Amino acid sequence: MTSTTVGGHVPAPRTAGPAPTGPCVLLKHGEVFLKGRNRHLFVERLHDNLRVALRGVGGSTWIKSAQNVTVLGGEVPREALVERARRVIGFNSVEPAVRIPSDLDAIVAAVVEALSGAEHRGATFAVRTKRRDKQFPLTSSRVDAQVGARVLAALPGLRVDLARPDVRVTVEIDRKETYVSWDRLPGLSGLPVGSSGRALVLLSGGYDSPVAAHRAMRRGLACDFVHFNGAPYTNPASVYKAYALARELNRFQPPGDLHVIALGKAQKQLAVAGAGRLQVVAQRRLMVRTASALAARTGGEALVTGDSLGQVASQTLANMVAVDEAATLPVLRPLLGREKQEIIDEARSIGTADVSVLPDEDCCSLLAPRRVTTRAELPQLRKVERRLDLDEVIEALLDETQVMRPGAEEAD
Ligand code: ATP
Ligand code: MG
View: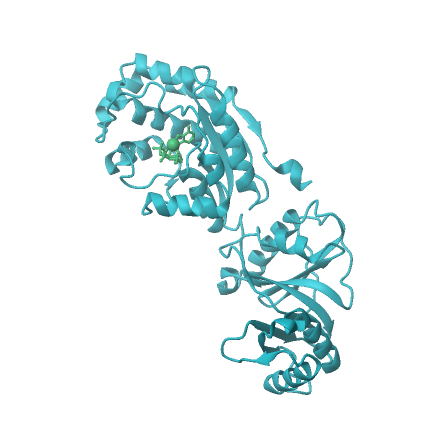
């Protein structure tokens, strides 16, 4: 492992050089490692995001770069480092570890220490060595055997099971230092947030759009959010929900902005213009038009929605086509082929379900006709829209937009 400390764009809160021995965390790179010549750019982005995730962790930290692995340590409890690192998109696994000199006695002592809690349980173990420094005097399998034998002598309550051990201890030997780890927690994998560009997510209060945002982030899109509420005709419950959802989502990325737009009056204008059964689709078209104009100001290159094909009447193919026609940016729909239950399960696992389940007054139900059309007719929609001065309406909506950055205060 070459131990160059990577300088990045984002300054860490306080940094100190790594101590020669001590606790650390190994972060195994995900898809980044498939990247060819640009790999260093992805790794820099990954480390920038890690530094942001470490803000406010309560002590100095350091990051060391190696091939397909990042080593993280600092004057902070290891659990806190693990917890922060597991939110960073782009690591396949997060492994609590200890850093020691590359010396057989030190390795044995570290493995004994790692396994001493397991001894009284009569647990089984296996040692797996990776030797990145081929000058180390023993081959990997000799290290496995010698360490295994000496651990058994020190902790006779343990048993070896190479096939299905209770504890798999990994020894990674580099030139100067060696890392011993005994646990492998799954990371979020995916591409580092920001490596694919920036997007604006249409965030409602439901289950779908937060999950869509999380999927977009895992494909490397840094996300800002826009929420439309029915003010002045609805209560602010949906805004609180959108704020709480954006805060949850911002845990996984350098925090993005939430824009809140009061759509109520414009919705009334569409109704007065005779939208009738097209009201919901007309509103959706106004949302993507406004979001496209907003994205031009926030640097967004695409819109993201939580649509899933055919899930509800407003999400038929014809209606999606009508919505796309109104957007001036591509509309990405990461959940297009997903079923509702899958989406809800995913919302639970990323932590947005508890917010999505809360009641609110969705602006879409304001002025919604009893039966939503499933086959939006474009000529009819255009006719309704011509009765409004759309540019003026959008300008007015953007002028009154409220901007906030949920969760940023926690990171500072
Ligand atoms: P969700 O669970 O995300 O609310 P949904 O199943 O309720 O979605 P729709 O109400 O048809 O579906 O909305 C489809 C998509 O349109 C949403 O996923 C979201 O991206 C966007 N959207 C709907 N309402 C709003 C809103 N009030 N503000 C911002 N985006 C919205
Ligand atoms: Mg909804």
